[in-house]
Length: 262
Length: 321
Image (cartoon, rainbow over all chains, first blue to last red; front, side, top):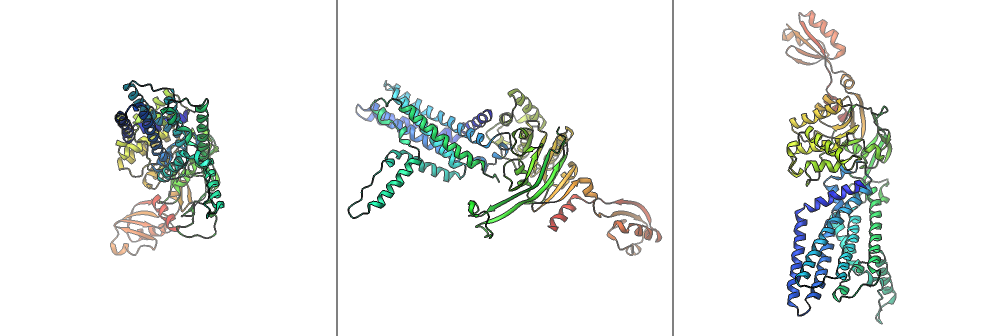
């Protein structure tokens, strides 16, 4: 466990000392300030608009930053040859991967917390209640990050940053629509073949089955209308995200254990 | 210290499949080869050797001979295609054995955001060492490699020599029994090379085993107890450095004074070099040469057997391959 934490701490330290990362977080916080300006322009809907736009920004920036950091995670170590001095040490390859993953998660936890605090500060300025549902929404955004980071690590364990970034982004987009894909039905026009459309729908169902259901982590509508989430929803979504991340890490570890580092 | 060999390689092989289709499992054992599409490269072809405790072992070979590939197999970075190897009597993936070795890769790159103490603390954290142990050791090593003055500087601001020195410090953070150094002198100026050479000598005096690859033969001759010469993935020569250098006919240097130039020209058929009073004569011809020289009035000043240089052996093997 100690070795995993040592790798995680180093990954965290490297990202935090990276000026690009700091600039992106500052930019994201700056964007949140824009939310306040937009919501101020709306009539009596300031708080709702701020919740809507604020959660959208926290979620989008978290996912984009996670893909940006995660996609190059392993590749960078190989490219810069830093991995050559790590793997010969008394450490399993999976420990290295899990350490890198936890490092990224800790970075993302800082980023999501900073943005969420900035959002909460705006509520405080407007003397509005941040509320439990907003806290749950922020937590679920972080769980989504847990899943996206695991996907990025999986793709990063065998491909280049560009390819793993594209693959992660692709699965992220599919995952956001996974609930709709899973129930997709296509009706043929009178002059079309229903069989082909059924096959397309079956394919969509298959994709939805493999991709993570990221729609679980978007509860903005509950937050905006101050509706309580169904009982056990947060726990269920958290466990589902955690399980998906573990599966990704196991597959990544298997692929990574077979690699030669030339 | 371990009494049995500290490092053994038995028929170790590595074959790569390169090219566009080479990454796909189904294409790895095709009988045909198309350059750029699918091609098999035999990087290491059945290497067998042993390294004894306390030895300084030089692993020599021209570029592309397979030195780094072999070292990477030993370090668990590349899986051997065939054969086996042991580190401190244990299989290559044994973590307890790994905890007793130190490794510096060729042209190392390190986490540039770290400062020297953080850097060594990070590597120390990968070994079963207490915080106090690794901090004390880090301080001592930084002092030894002459980096105590650069404690506040991140590694990105280090010169090449400083990077190499901190690289050696990370390889020694766990006080290893076996130190594996891949081209430790490569790219360093003469002063930097001397510093690394001194460090290796020091490790030797501490009783540690050093296995290092190099193509800077001058350094190898000074440091090593034994060497192996690797050419195109095969060990061509191996043995104690003195035996290798004395092996074969390097000739005998004879200094003869008092010979007129026209007489000297007629002396013996085994003369391979003639420079003023200095003659280099084939060993088997030296008696005849000395007799002839005395007969024509020459005065023998010295007779010295010539040692072959490691470079000569190295070039000979490379050319033969």
